[in-house]
Amino acid sequence: MAGSATWLERVRVPHTLVLLLGMIVLAVLSTYLLPQGQFERIEHDGHTLVVAGSYAELPTPKPVSPLLMLTAIPRGLADSQDIIFFCFIIGGAVAVVRKTGTIDAVLGWVLDRFGSKPGLLVAAGVTTFAIGSSTLGMSEEYLPLVPLLIALCAAMRMDSVTAVGIVMVGCGVGYGAAAINPFTVVIAQEIAGLEPISGAAFRVAIWFPFLLIGAHHVWRYGTRVRSRPEASLVFGLDAPEAAHADSTPPSIGAVHVAVLVVTAASIGLLVYGIAAWGWYLSEMSAMFVGLTIVIGLVGRLSADDTAKSFCSGAAELTTTALLIGFARAIKVVLEDGMVLDTIIHGIAEPLSTLGPHLSAVGMFAIQSLLNFFIPSGSGQAYVTMPIMAPLADLTGVSRQVAVLAYQFGDGFTNMMIPTSAVLVGMLGMANIPFDRWLRFILPLMVKIWVAGIVALVVAVSIGLA
Image (tube, rainbow, N blue to C red; front, top):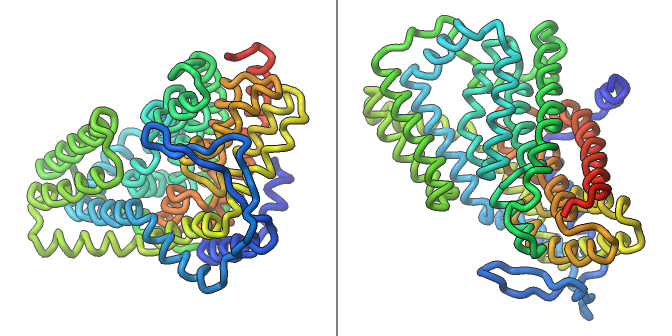
């Protein structure tokens, strides 16, 4: 991959906000250049599904005007309000925990015991996040852990790219090769008319190779940064606040233990709430607000100190909030201009002329491309699976393989698309420019894509059903 790194180093991508604004402009232009049309939609169990074969062009096209393009940005911010406010609250809560000195004390304890074993941090971290995404469909829930990982990696002489890599690679592998993810696998199989969680044995089998590929990529990069700090992709840039750990961290005391117990109990409640009660961003945000108040009391902080720390931590994520809103505005423009269905129809239709193996690979490529426009896993399932399932029947591909191709396209590509709220949120927290992240993740994506193609060809060959 040395050649890839060489040409990637010559790529200069603007600030992520500029990049997203340019994509919004391209989305507006597409409403003038592409025919406008839409599929018919029906309601099914409270969800909207498209009707396969129902695409029709609109008789009177209405392209999106430049003025509407500008309004798409605040509308994108409004549509993303749940995750934006979740980020603000996470930033505030983490800042309050840090104010108690608990994070620095824990970092000191971890470094005393594992400071010489960064490989263990990478392996355990990527595996843990991959398991959470594969089983519970976790992604946004990882945002609170990013500052802690940044601080831990910095203390181990690794950089913020390594920290975000541990989370995003684990999340991407977990989603892409998910065994029982309720937000992708279960929904897609239901739409395709398959038994829930069927074919899990094959997905578990391929999950391990993908995990090894991802963990090795992060470990190799982190090791290189440890030995040569100038090899860091963010060398010379301002480090995020979380990386500035106390050079002489305090010993763990009674207050720190109390804060840890409360925080651990809250995380346990969070996981249970997601699994048992269907919690999502609003409920999780409320839990972190409550955690902030309790941590302030347990950590013996005054009300003013708690409030100031919370506001300071939330303010650090303003850029992150803007990135998330701008990313969502792209989809707003495509939907307003009635070209999103046109794009889906146009790239899915050629599959009908291919054989089973090439059709499966083509589905993977199409789902990867569509994930740029529809980064929501469940949203992509509701839009694309009603089309892909009957298309699979026509091309000799089993519907189980069509679901697998959807998983690959949705999950793996989330590691690199700038329209993913989770990715741009984490990059914003870590102060990582998108072009620097691209240099890190693109070589891995090539390996993942190749492995994904092999897995799909094997699935077709063995008749996965």
